[in-house]
Structure formats: C-alpha cells, structure tokens
Length: 98
Image (tube, rainbow, N blue to C red; front, side, top):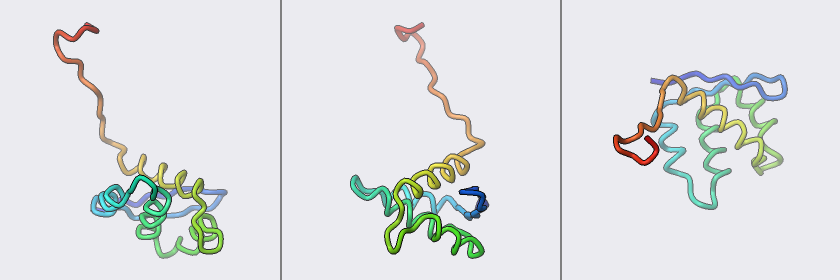
C-alpha cells in the first residue's frame, strides 16, 4: 500500500507517494557517511510526478542536494509515514524504577 504525503515547503505543496518498500530501501541504503544522498534518492523516487520540478527547485543547488533542506523534508515525510502507530517502552516487573 502506498501512502500519499503532502509537505509544504516555502508555501509550495510537494506530494510524495511512499510505500513500505520505498521506506525500507531508504533505511537500508543509509551508510555512516551517506545520509543526505540516501534521503535525496528516497525523496526523488517517491515524489509525485506533478511535484518533481518544484521539489528539485527547492532541494537541489545545481547538481548537489541541499543537505539541510533534504533532511528536513525526509524527517517530515518519515514522521508522517510512521504516524498511526503507538510505540512505547514497557517497564519490566521488578525493575528498580518501580
């Protein structure tokens, strides 16, 4: 299943169509020194065709992704993609904090 996510950047709406496979590939592609490129590739793969030109205007300077912009956008997309799932740490019985 693909989730449509719209992000507003500088008064411009950019749509992304994200699936579990897309997100998993993004996470698996991350290397210790390749955070921006894997995020940019993920966003480029999932950006809606109608938003592609606007995305590139906002997220790329020449041929180089704008790291801070890319990381902010991917953070918003990732947070929205994972929404709806409640995850919390359950304390073990007999733990010192009880």
